[in-house]
Image (tube, rainbow, N blue to C red; front, side, top):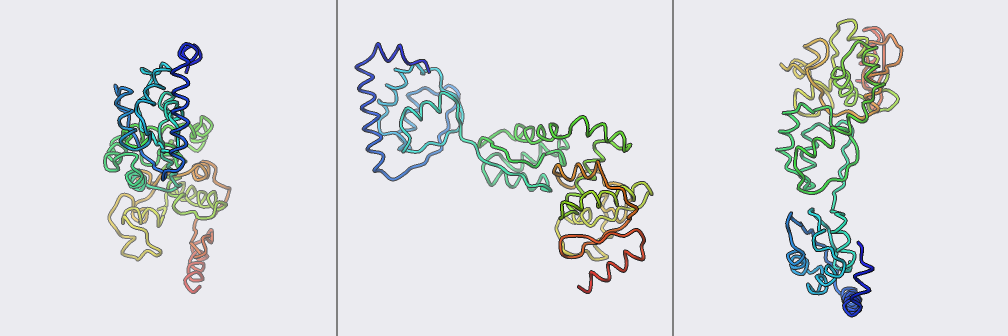
Amino acid sequence: MKTIDILVENKKYVITAVIAVFLTAVLLSFAPQKIAIIKIDAGSTPKQVAKILKKEKIIISENVFLTLVWLTGTEKKFQTGIYKFSNRMNEVVILYNIVKGRSYKIKLTVPEGYSSKDIAEMLERKGICNGKKFLGVVNARKLEGYLFPETYFLIPESPEEYVASILNSEFEKKFTRRFLDRTKDLKMTREQIIILASIIEKEAKDEKERPLISAVFHNRLKKGWHLESCATVMYALGEHKNYLTLKDTRIKSQFNTYLHPGLPPAPICNPGLASIKAALYPVETDDMFFVADGSGTHRFSKYFEEHSLNKRKVSVQ
């Protein structure tokens, strides 16, 4: 804000404004703290904003605020947005935030392995956007698997298309040219890698096991075997289960990799970078099977007989 010339020419008003701001700060220091979320729409005048701030008990005097606006020549510099103010903030700080467009943002942390539905529910709960509309955008653009798990700072009541694009843009940044070249080396498409990564994300609990689980799936794909991933069955069921029944593994769904060979038609969640790397860079192994041991890790084996023995050992633990 270019205020020096204005302040010099208007000493009387400056002194009055400074005293008013000081007295206001003193008075507010004794008042209970008040937090308010203020929305400034396009075309809002300083007078309208001052009225809202006064109504929300963020400022004591509209005149003091408007005098400050006049002295700083910022009448036409108000930026639209949603702002979070406290009555402990003085008028100078409040005006500065509005002029600089320092709008209020909500922290959103998307965990690895969240589905688009999980993300939509979190967005709705935090007041960032409408969850149902967000899910509609994701489904229309087929973005399941391509919403990158990361921490974001988003404006409340954001357009659903905008939020989806932000999460997808982060994925595009992370999936580098080196990754694209690697998909070609594996004779796979990017879509196939992300589908596989989403399964690894749901199957792996131990970070070190991701490349091992990836290797088993790659080996099965090369031989044309069924992946037999419990995670895909649970996706088809629409619920998480500690143990699957024989009936569960027979559910009629294209996502049931016990019934259908190869990869499912789409990702089952949004994988993180570690699972994407695991899908791209599996370890060298002849293992074809793995079974969860109940402690968060798995037992791997090359032959079915050994796999059956591992399953029996796990079941009696």
